[in-house]
Length: 240
Figure (cartoon, rainbow, N blue to C red):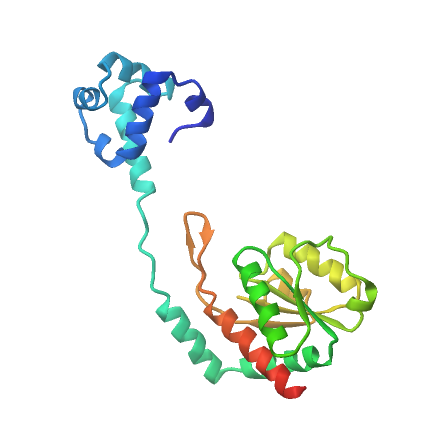
């Protein structure tokens, strides 16, 4: 609604209006100019000057823009995620996910070192995965810096487990390329087997749930990832 340049040009009275409007946008959108003046203790002339500073001819045009802003930024209804999770477990029981996990476990069991990578919420789960595998006796580490120095004797006979919902995160893609070049076998856990990360991995474990976003953030459920990590760790332990 307000640009950084516009805010920088505001004087003290403008800031009074700005603070009131941002805190009561849904209310101001239906106020008369005199009502806003009374609420903010400024003159109607100050309000009109404020409107012109933000590119509006008058208060009526400002209210139209404010109404559109409020409508576009109303909070979305967040799904419970129960349907996505239920569908995932139904596919797990009827599909070949367990077979893919067994193939991945065979690779991990033969490796001397397991390296987990990921960004954002995937990074948090990568760290959890490293801890969970280590708890079951498989030496694992979580690395979030692609330039973190790792000696070749550690990368020799290692497996990298890369986590990414979209499978397109450029940071993780570059990290995988570097680890691939060093000879580490890559197992990726992504929401789709058709993603870039899935394609450059030695083995991909896709889980296919409905991807959800809220105000620019990816809020896709990570329950399938936790399930896959724990089952994979247990399968690895049993093979060892």
